[in-house]
Image 1 (tube, one colour):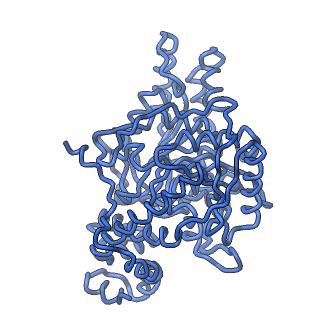
Image 2 (tube, chains in turn yellow, purple; image 1 turned 90 degrees about the vertical axis):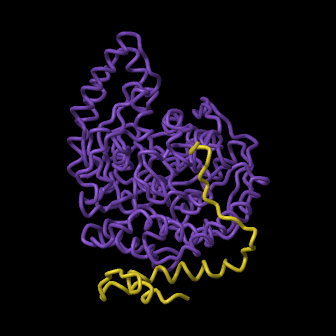
Image 3 (cartoon, rainbow over the protein chains, first blue to last red; image 1 turned 30 degrees about the horizontal axis):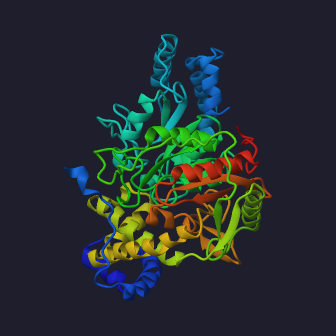
Length: 57
Length: 461
């Protein structure tokens, strides 16, 4: 699991000390499910961005 | 009165557009001080427009079913020359120089916009307790939340101020207020309705759609707003059809999937019994109700949250140093999203494609899926948790639990009211269909509505 507090500090986010635990707690929860899914990915699994390039033409 | 009935009254000269709009504006004046549904009313503009539309009808120009119909739009749709706050201090004085595509299309169809609707700040939340423009109140019980983020849209429709209102939905923001306020709401397929000129929250999850008093009214709106838009890079060229269900439409023989996992876990008991009652009614109308087992919806929700956090923070990262300009809940979400790595975001999008493929196999077995929209009815304003299944759950996570996944999957989803709880609060059910099958889910919704799956009008209205 990531050390979200350290990452927040390294990114320079100015989260007050009395807010930081409450702010970052949901990340740990969602990360736990997310990390468990990563082993399912094979290199050929491509991302789904769904932006249609013909619109840029 | 429905849009069709109002249109008949206009064309039979029983009422003018000016009169129809004047009734709506009077209701807005009377109810809005308590409901806080509108941020910027546009009464003068609406009255002027009504006169023009009356003149057109008298002169033989009829723009169709929306001609002269009072509507409103969530305050994240850009309106040329009219303030568009997005419920945020960042845009407090923002006056766009152009219209959102849906605004252009609705105006061309003859709709009369009465104002810009209050919402959760930046559409990033589900309570619509806006710290800058006031908390929107639920017309069924003004001490309760209308849901969000399109809370003003739900409140204005439920309170009978407007016939229909535009909302947006990134993680349930049309369907949650529809459920809590007892209205219909449709989140179309991703790419079906243009996002151009609507403030983005998450580029690959944002959907635009209407809330309305009936399924057919929502379908009329979709007829005008659906379709390709070269200004929206995600816009689809899939053909647009007439989405309005026929009178007497049938669901005989349709296979309705009834999820055995996830969707009936930890519900308010009244929600479960109302949705099961609607399923029984569907069966009595000739539909085949089939139990189905769905792919891992907790995984789907987790990926949707990762992607939402990342994309929303990409939009607002430049502003986050000005912490005081955001409400506390929105600020926390933006800060969370700033910490997710690019690799994690891309992996979430890779898993998204994989889960979509798995989920799409469902459509071999059923035509549509039916489930509760929200596990809970409208919470009290300020309530942080709801008690479901014997435990306290964050009200935001509970309210989005059953809807968020369909933003990730992109499927069209319709929420309709299906009953009232013991305390008299609306309960919603959602009908989910394969990509671009809006006509099918609207047909199912209309058949259920015609078959008595409905609620009485809001007493506040």
